[in-house]
Image (cartoon, rainbow, N blue to C red; front, side, top):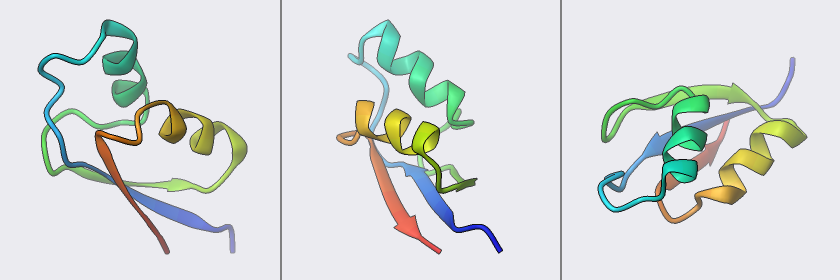
Length: 60
C-alpha cells in the first residue's frame, strides 16, 4: 500500500500571497481545519514545502 500523508489547513489564508492560495487549493484544501489524505510523493511534498507555515502534516 502506498504511503499517505494527512494534510490539515491550520492557518488562515488571509494575507497569504495569491501563489500560496493556489498551492493550498491545489492540495484540495478549502476551509480552515479541513484535512485531506494524499499520497506521499515528490509532487505532494513539494507543494507542502511551499506553504509549511499554513499546514500541519501527519504521516499515516
